[in-house]
Image (cartoon, rainbow, N blue to C red):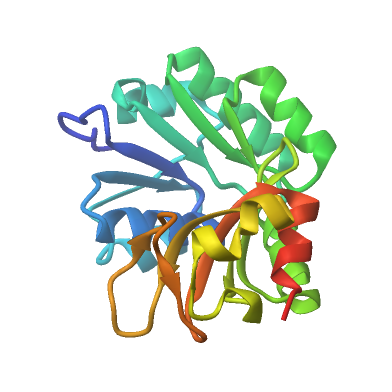
Length: 223
């Protein structure tokens, strides 16, 4: 079992090479991050061996196996194990006991997530729930993309509503009239522009808006 040599504070260990874990690992590698990917399934390890820099086969519920791979030297870990809740929990516990300072873990239910937090996960991710919520908002409103935070605060991308066309943001006043802040404007074929009061909005512009979730939803439905 080869040990990952000289991990840096930005190196990431990904545990679980299913759809979610492999997507995270592949994206990090393409962003130039060093990644050690681990799975107990040898077929998945072989599948990703040529595409990821470092791949290892191991039982990640075994703290001794993780220690031999040097996971304690990593600054961040992602536990992307799917439906095997016991393996997910035991892996997070092993990482926490190894002293990994920043542990992200995938959960499939709220109860699963609560257990992961209790045993040492610093961030719990609900990929299916989060994506389902985003798609629902985009299907029922005028949003082209959507992110909601825990404190009823949201960011969305939407086509500029008609009352903003050919006006500056100071004149159309989305903040005072609708309670949302336009933080950026994207025009086709041009660079993203941070919004200022004097920024003029055109008919086909995309607006990046933020604010209380309810007000963002209403603003994105204005036409």
